[in-house]
Amino acid sequence: MMKQANGNEIIQLFESWSPKKLACMENDPIGLAIGTLNKVVTKVLVTLDVNQEVADEAIEKGCQLIIAHHPPIFRKLSNLRTDTPSGRLYEKLLKNDIAVYAAHTNLDVAEGGVNDLLADALQLQNREILEKTYSEHLMKLAVFVPDEHADELRYVLAKAGAGKIGNYDSCSYSTDGKGRFRPLEGANPYIGDVGEIEVTDEEKIEVVFPTSMKNRILKAMLNAHPYEEPAYDLYTLAQETNEYGIGRIGILKEPMSLRQFADYVKKRLQVPMVRIVGNENSTVSKVAVLGGDGNKYIHIAKRAGADVFVTGDMYFHVAQEAQAIGLNIVDPGHHVEKVMIKGVKEKMTSLCKENKLDVEFIESEVNTEPFIFI
Ligand SMILES: [Zn+2]
Image 1 (cartoon, rainbow, N blue to C red):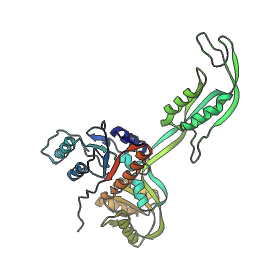
Image 2 (image 1 turned 180 degrees about the vertical axis):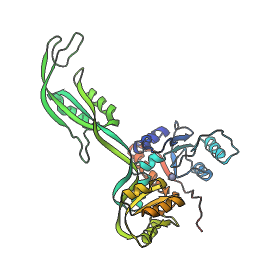
Image 3 (image 1 turned 30 degrees about the vertical axis):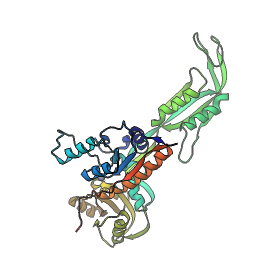
């Protein structure tokens, strides 16, 4: 049975995929920008940008929520006048009870987000992150449990998500030993008597998990443990996990000339033109890609060994610098980020279906590319 969805439930699922903590730009104005999520949502419009035409489209198609990549309120407002273009846009959205939620650099970084979608479109193999922007430390829990409860506790910990290492789950390590304790006045011991020292056969179970899972794992362990006062050690490890980052780098299925690659980019990213920097006859195989404005990343792309860097909004002087360091550039424009429209629609449709939420995601058909190529 599918159930009616609330805006908050939809965004909770969205953030389980593309959490706000992944945003890698200072003060990136992500999250709910306009309106409220405390309402029933049956239709969501997915768009790269929000402008008057997109707002009209949302009204016409009966959407109560817009998910956009570019935040509609990017700089701090000092007034809210309805005689300015942006003021009129906010007025229209509010009057029609349309909420806008923005996922900007967090969606660039997320697995399956903008940069992965671009790398998918270019069919990059052996893909890696171009620049790491987020990671967390592993933690270890060592818990002492009577032998007869060890299997159950191992199961509970694994079910809560502890002990996942690479392509393995349910990983744990156990050692046998003796637990000693003396229940004091007021205790209600699972084993032993008040005032008597008790010695029991116990196992020490050790599991690892990312720091962000700490509360969930501890809660599961405390609920499943038979003792009134479970004994456990919890500590942070030096190892890092859950690495995320911006941009992707990978290998083309077949090496090609820069000129051929430029045509390939046009076709694969569906753009009418690209600008290139570099020798058209040079061979390219290793490709770095970063959606939006990647001016700051040319040296990172070069260091990572890219033959060519695909990114938008390339400045004149940065293009000259790329030329000087011997990095080929293909600039397909900023609008290639439109790949997120289909990507977000498909991901959210499947997440909502899995969670039995009755909501339809609609791809915006408005072209928000301001440039005309003549
Ligand atoms: Zn962008």
